Structure formats: C-alpha cells, structure tokens
Length: 249
Image (cartoon, rainbow, N blue to C red; front, side, top):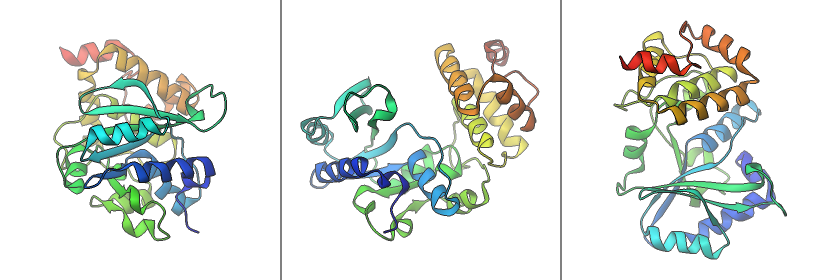
C-alpha cells in the first residue's frame, strides 16, 4: 500500500483513524504544510525530512471537534487561542519529549474554500498543499492533494519560491528558508530573499531567539548556519538581534 510516510508508524496511523472519526457532521479537516510536504518529498526522493507536529485546518463545529479529541485522551499543549489550539496524544508509554507525541497544531477557519486559505496563508510554494483527512488512507492520496501552482513541481525540483499570492511575510520565514536550504533546496531569487530579510524587522525578541535556536539545532550549529546564510547571498548577521533593531530604524 502506498502510504504517506508518517502513517508507516502503526500507532500514528491508529491515532489518525481516531481523528478521522472525530470530525463532526458537516465539518472538514485538512492536513496542510510541513508534514504533507515532507510526505510528498519522501514519495519522490525516499528521504525523510525532520518534522515536529501536524498542521491542520478545521472548518466547522470547533467545540464538538475539540470535545471529541479530548474524549480520545488528547490533551491541551501550551497554545490556546481563539483561532488556534495545540493538542497532543502520546504514542509511547512514559513520553519524555515532543517526538513521543502526535502533536496537532489546529487552525480554525471561517473560510470554507481550502484552496483560498492556502493561497492567502502559505509562504513558500512547496508548502502550498492540503489533503482532506478522509483521503489520507487512500492508495491514490497523491492525486487527492489540493495544491497551489508550482507546489508539486517545486518540491520535485527542490526549488524554493515565495507564494506571490501572499501579501505579508513574517520574520520567521527567513529562518524556515535557511532550514530548507540546509536540506538541499535551491535558494529563492535574490528579490525574494530580500523580502524575507526585511520582514525580520517585525520579529519580537522571543521569536527571534526561538527561531535562531531552532535553526542551529536543525542544521548542526551556528557555524554551519552562517555558511548557509552566506550561500544564500546574505552578508548580514541574521543571528544577531542587533540586525533586527537596525532594520526597524
């Protein structure tokens, strides 16, 4: 059976069956972003990329859906917002770190068109993917994916490209770009890198520190991270908060 890579884990697969059964009537749940992108990448290259959680977009009866998950022993993580919640469920006994859980990062949308949500929300084209949870277990799941233009072809080409439909980018997007380049993706165009660099001025210090640490952990240290930044054609020190302060002036 042609399974998505994360469903190769029997426990994770069982939990997603539970999630599928938890969707209230007249509601929809979509897997989007990193986990789906990594599954498509694995489909083409048979190489696993790192992941931490499962990004989901839910359209419908939020209260009932969360209650259903809570009844299945999902418990709240730290983030609880009006439009977003994080729930997790252990996949091993005596869990110790995030890898011992299925972590669901759920965004609640009042929009009903998942393509339109992707068009306005997604930063890089390689992340412009969505699949209905009810299609996860299909043998032809690749054909069920809803995609932005260039999403699949850019994954196959390992090419980073900004989603031109998105109007605003975040300071964290540059650090995501660095992580992708460390995995062998081709850097975006210079103008696009400049857009991401300028967006750093919006970064609060706590997000800067968190993303800097995440990059160092992901690529194998500060020196390797600096070399990747140089490879991208950036001469500024994006790992110093002084750079963020200068951009604000």
